[in-house]
Length: 140
Image (tube, rainbow, N blue to C red; front, side, top):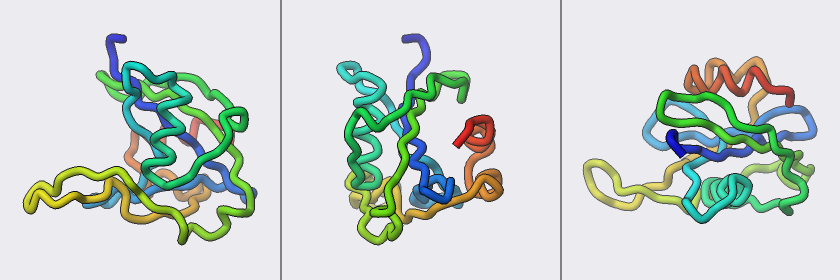
């Protein structure tokens, strides 16, 4: 693997909106995603990231493999899509269990600090430009 592979999930609501996670200490939102560990398949990595960043688990058979996409010079994206049920109507039960040390205090800080649904027309304003470009090129 020359470039790193970040594996992520497009969680799609019955209203055709995407689940976005607010990236702590930034103004931007992102899909649940993260780097694949050496021993993981891309699906395993995507499922782990979804669980760590949002506390959501779906059966592996529910994931549709969307393939790999150019993202940054040293990073590619491998994306999956999963249809959310009405059980995700409220996002209050979602929680991030993945932490990083705060740059000033060193205290454990969650990678994600909020969740929302976003329609296609909101993606460009909410996400980083490269991520918005990829998301808007896909059918969801």
